[in-house]
Length: 309
Image 1 (cartoon, one colour):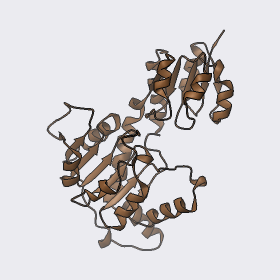
Image 2 (spheres, helix red, strand yellow):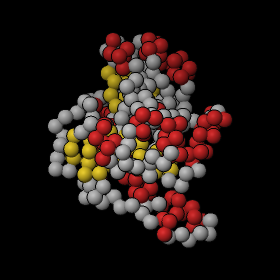
Image 3 (cartoon, one colour):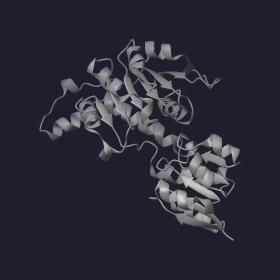
Image 4 (cartoon, one colour):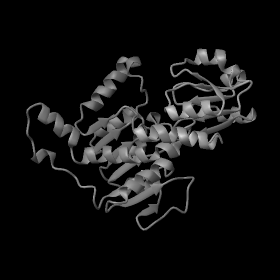
């Protein structure tokens, strides 16, 4: 009897082809709902997920044959890994597969803000040719604060290595990573000295709304603020308030607290519209880790960690 794997999200063909070659029976259901998955998960030995379907204790209780869960990408907040461990279900993710592109995208957001690229382009589209007001800030010789120095934080530091910048990194779990360019430090020192602050944190009970009113009020300079981690790590209302109060030179996000724009309440729509009214604010639709190369590499990393290749 073939081992069954349910795939709950779009994946690179390499993952599908490799599983087939290794003798797995694949149920490819990239649009499957939680309810539909609940109805069929009892037959699965493997489960491939992203951030769309929650894998909670109730679903795991139904998964009587489940041996492993492969999370395409980083962040395990939608998987009850503690309960999975009680059932001896192996849970793996693949942050190594998309960390490079997240680092590059973070730099892209930052340089776009510092060099006024999106706002200047909008002005040209409107028939305006404005130079003096679009004078850029150079990244060279700035101090960059990186909060969270895991896969994507270190990747951002790597793409910054070609710039003459000082990097201040803060990570409560990681030590012994200092170099001539990178210094380990506290949040308070970053708030005091950084010209740029970039978040690279997982979403946990500790990091929910990490970037809140107190966080922004702690800045001594007016830094550029970047987040390519999880939307709920930043309190959106606090970010808007910081922009309104002139506490930031600009803000670039790849994530939002609620990324289902069609579900927005009137309050959420107003909040996003207020943010978008600022020329020094940009947002992209959670694509930092979504490059063509990462699409393949994340699948390859998952298969390697599961011992399938």
